[in-house]
Amino acid sequence: MSNPEHRELLQEIRRLRGSIDELNGLLRSIFTSTNDNLPTRKRTSKKKKRSAGAVEKESGASEPRSSPPGRHF
Image 1: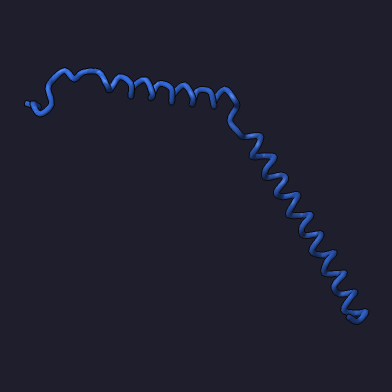
Image 2 (image 1 turned 45 degrees about the vertical axis):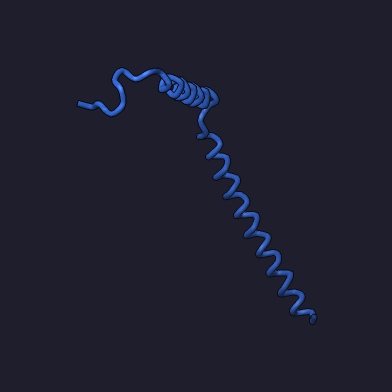
């Protein structure tokens, strides 16, 4: 590899490293702002309570029906 080619490659590498640093900064700011907007732990526990209520409904479905099957009228 000749000296001018070597210099061009070094300049291209520096330029690419600068672009990578800029992209890393953008990604860092995106993820930082996203993490700030994540739901709190309290909100997650509400979700668990809701799913626990759904389980109770399913267990209630095994109770005997008020009318026999097939007699809808």
